[in-house]
Image 1 (cartoon, rainbow, N blue to C red):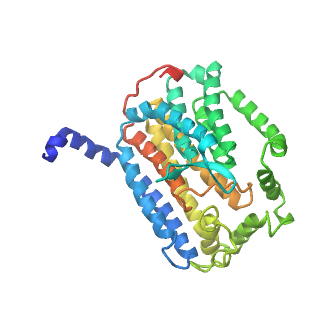
Image 2 (image 1 turned 60 degrees about the vertical axis):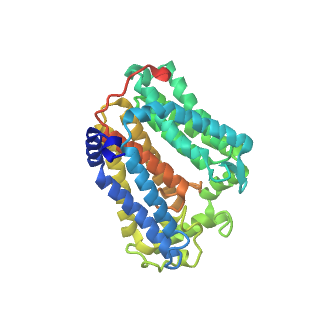
Image 3 (image 1 turned 30 degrees about the vertical axis):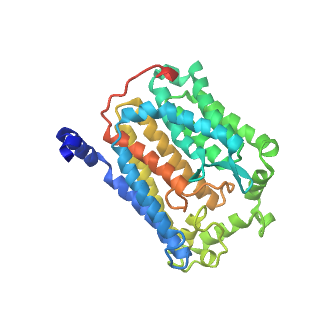
Length: 384
């Protein structure tokens, strides 16, 4: 059978047009961020591609192809899959409670034999899609302040509580921030936002004392006073601060960071890779990478702004909110401005699961850009 029999000329032409609509500067910025991560992994491994840098680049290459493929998927397909993806993610989180694989004291994984994964990663995409679809069918008045708000509140609370129970505080916070961002961007009343912020701040002390696990409470107390136990619970934060400060403006030089090369800095290729970058390339290197992150956020929000459908705008903005939360939480954690919660620097840190989630999300962002003129059928709230 010939190629023309499989794909009609008109379909091939449409694919070529779609391919040309992909935001390639955005894609290049992602490649540069992932490349900077591989560069640091090569350094901390003693100028070796193994065990981290080569695997990191291979995974990114696969995820990059996947992102481009997802960019060609019509926005109406994403819309149709929104609730099913959320439902599957929620069911898998429930399954973790009963048959989850426990590692290092936390039950966060499902082990299928041939693959082990965290269902919470699926929910990071599922919550964005489901909320974007829900609000696509609401009027501005209903989105601002009405009984309809109980539905998104429940949609956010269910996965947050399940993930927090695993326990995985960092991911639970990310899902809550992502869901909250979509609700706010959908047009939530500022009165509700202000009340929620005040209530959230007031709830922090009792949550720390009576809700968090002992090790989580210890992390918060260590964040407030890391010098109390410099060789124990405060070790991560103190070593990260030393690495950040010792880099100065220009850094010590590639491969010359004492904290990372001599293994004083923990998790130097994962959660604290940004501290590794700061030590070897200094403030200038950090500012350059942060500029790339800012460019990615700007271009993703621009794609959201270009969408003609409310679903497309909220979906792209929700993915961008997740990506931004990753950056802010990891950056604050590395600088000692937030407790250590195990949130990696996206695309830079070693780890395939988070990278896959981020790139699937960016496939959605690219799809919103490519199909920005697509008409998505409107409906009413949860019944869309």
